[in-house]
Length: 253
Image (cartoon, rainbow, N blue to C red; front, side, top):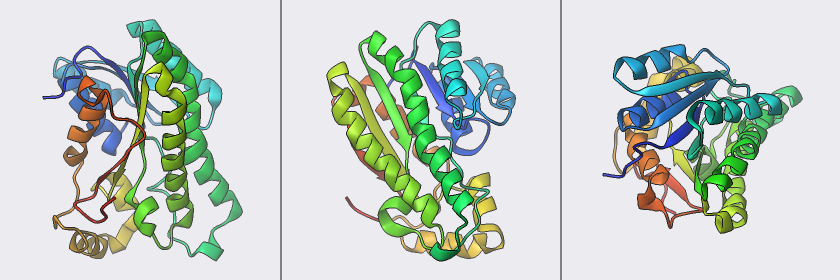
């Protein structure tokens, strides 16, 4: 099995949903986890510690560069190094489904600032520490929405397409420092955010999404963990610039 034991991994958006699933799974595998979120991540850290794992909760606003720098500094102060980051924090659950011409200017800008610039800010904060280690792994969470096309959520789909482009450019730029940069593009995962986004349309959406997949069931958080573990481990030491679809076989790249 791909090993992350002893690695120091930052997970953004770790208070709930996918971020919490990544954090708890990696900690159970022996990683030391820095759980960052604008929400309180103490429950995530308490769960990890109660199972014998090692984790640190940090307040993180990816919309603020100083907050991202402080997160990286806290990781370094506590654990002495950073080996990888999962850029999971994003605006999703609170977004309203809107036709392209009906999206408010401020909503568009907010999504771009958090979902795109937020990833860039976190990368900026950790890249010097990864270089100091002689390499590491960056995982950016994209979405099926960027590849398949998601109606009535143009701002979200566009932001995740930008994450894929950022991943490819960073992979080319950082390869000489042995920093690997990859993206994961999941289908709609059954989390609080998905429930919030679809609201009363959730059950119908679940049927439509699963029906378009080769593997016809809805994606759960644990379905992403193996891919994350692989990309953080040395088993993927020659894999970079890739977007891995974890979508039950909806699209084939």
